[in-house]
Image 1 (cartoon, rainbow, N blue to C red):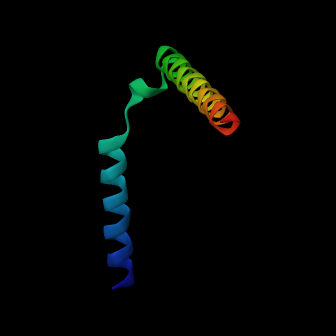
Image 2 (cartoon, rainbow, N blue to C red):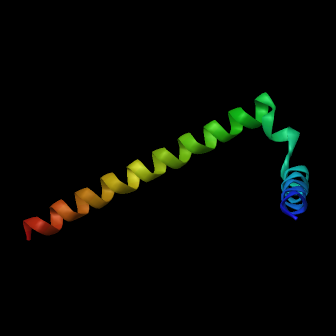
Length: 62
């Protein structure tokens, strides 16, 4: 009985992995694009934080 449950779990994990594995995600171009996207996101977040801090500083002066 335990072997059957383990077998079903192994098959389920295998099927999930087969459906979700995308080899194109591991190409050099794809990885570079993701790095550029992350870099852009980080830059935008830093800029927003800086503007928010400046706005708070101005509001505190009033």
